[in-house]
Image 1 (cartoon, rainbow over the protein chains, first blue to last red):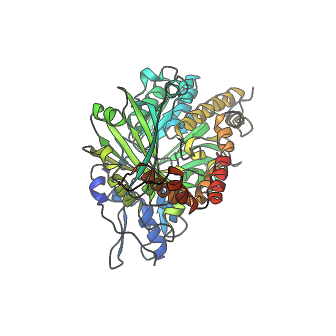
Image 2 (image 1 turned 135 degrees about the vertical axis):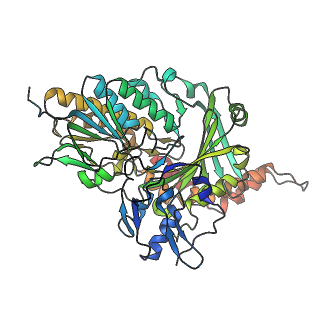
Image 3 (image 1 turned 30 degrees about the horizontal axis):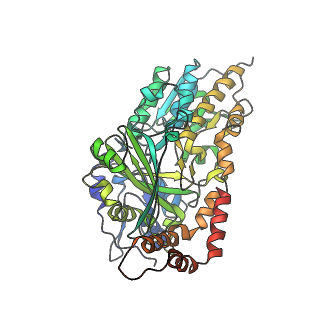
Length: 99
Length: 437
């Protein structure tokens, strides 16, 4: 298994400053959490919102709610463990005030 | 003149960023019926830039943009910094040439900036639908694009201009263009920090209303190909970094998640004082097409033109990053080509071909072509991101530090630092890079 450097930052706190309309009923991104581990670790390294997480026991998780809609995970793993990547439903998702 | 089929609109534009809004403005100004479909609840809601816009192409479309547009600061200081883990060497250049009309550039925030562009298009007569993403391009039996589907609604048009941004879902799904490779795209991450205008001017030694752009190479990406950026806004600083996805994702070349890179970058002893006391107000992410000329997809189709980042129009030269000026120019050309095709009654790829001629005849394709080798050279130039910043630190530590011991002549202090890296290797690498620039 390849490594992830120690994480000292809590990105969730930064995301809490962003404005979102979260679509509770519909995940616009779906990932296979049981898929290839190395593919998942790629997502841990490149998602700028830190939405792909793996804990010390190796448990994987993903939460689309803080998505910045950049599409990086689609480019990294769109052919492997990212099963679905769509734009959020009408009026949903992130809303940048500065950008 | 040939008769065009009756459609709901003459032109539909997908996406109201720099390319889409300008295309809509140009077509609406020529009297065409134009609909813009923007997935954000307002223009700019889904957009992010570093960012700075070089104004030359904007000036051609909006001659009074300096008075009208929500510009942050005129950039009159160019800074390039080399970082290793605890040192920094910065070049700070300022000159009246940077402020000359036609060469001037401005920091912008896409929230306000894109809303202004959309207002320009709307006041020229373009209609807008916000808050809904186009899911499909509609085609006739021959494969020509004849409209769009968004949710339940199907809306037809004679020409569709696709400016959906750097995550080209429709371009792949409906036009058959290839998905950009991870080696052709960078992930960008940015935070905005509020600071008083006078503090920003003091920290960057700028006159009132003017500002600095700063690019960092080296430890900001912990040796990954990429770099840090900083732009001064009116009352905030945009600070972030970009990293090539194929390298940042690769555990054998990088172990540090990009958000941790940003955290370490912010805590670097030379960076932390720049944002000291600043209030974090937004955290954003966005991709940047970095493959250059070789990743530009097909951008003229029967009934459809592709513009802006969706066409891969972006250039990261290391010392210069451009994208929005390409987007504005391509939007203008796409709008003009759509108008010409509508007037001639032929919106097939042949009828829309003037778009390609304008793109190839202008800086857009010429600049991408001139620097087409650069993305590849940069990708292989590991020492630029690791070894050189450390060498620079060693050189200046040897030059500036005084410890009271009898000193060696300067050359004797410098040569071992350069020699241990191999003069020929160093010379060869620099020569290769300069040739691609």
